[in-house]
Image 1 (cartoon, helix red, strand yellow):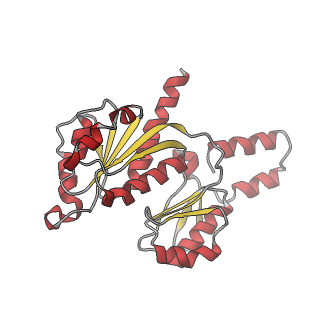
Image 2: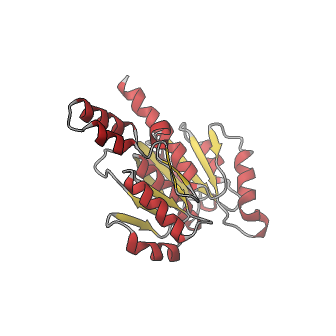
Length: 256
């Protein structure tokens, strides 16, 4: 349940479109539902503006299925991250028809309200093609939450002209997400070219000395360019969530 759902429920109750018993039934899973192996936080959307997200790595298919069913019963949109293709194949027969699986991003989305207008603009940049899966995870996340997203892929520092050719597009964004592995230099380059907040995402792409993304992470944390914040390695979801929250601030400014 998010603030809009709660407002509608209270309006319906006030206008006697709902009985108190029906309202209680809709609210009975708040603040969470105990499934034994998980306590699904149905109150999170009301508290923080976004529903609980299912991190699938380490969970069984049966556990993921039960969490999805719990969220569906409560009327939430569903986002599952790090969901492998084999797990999705086993889940698919139990999923509603509007389910959307992004194999590259390893995300599953079951969106409750597709008609909602998207806000502002987030531009997501990847250094290389190998970084696209994490960039896609960020894109899926931000779009589900309600942000308009554009992507710009394979514009890393090895061919910097590819980035410079697209600066006009980048400047139109409220927030920029930069996804890069290897040495992770692209975030610093973008930080020196634009005046927008930048969220840097190090990926685990790279040869041995990249240490599974630690090299890119340290480069981004040590950037001399101002206005860069850094999330954890391969955390496209975290970047998409933060970018969405920053993006919404632009809506507040425009209505003042």
